[in-house]
Length: 150
Image 1 (cartoon, rainbow, N blue to C red):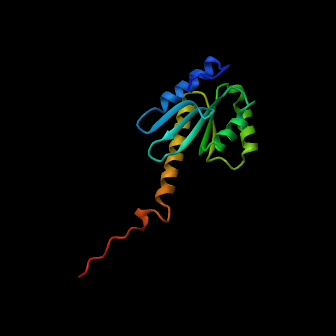
Image 2: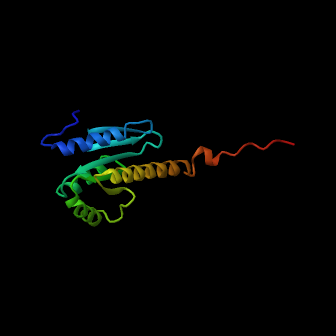
Image 3: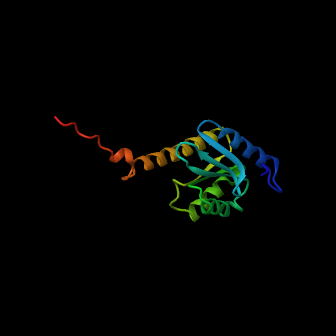
């Protein structure tokens, strides 16, 4: 698996590498060009699987998001590399996926965007952990200590 895809510019490549580096730590694992996504990240505790797409234009954004969801990603983040297309991409995503605020989000390619992306993915991972541990059949929720005989 190569980190650089065919016909990819330097800005796109380095954006992906920055994302892989940011999510290669004790909480997350990250892979470039995995499952046709630019970057796939896995939260190690909750097992949240998410794709991150670095997009320069709105041309392929909807196909990329749909493919990532079809491939089993629970969340898809889009990082817009060109500020001129940021609002176009947001509008396109909101029209195609109107009720997907929790599973699809668009971020700017800057320091603030990276921080917002990290916060959003951490919130998604925490929500998945809460969902798993609050499941009605979960052992910890249904386990009742035996009462002592007196």
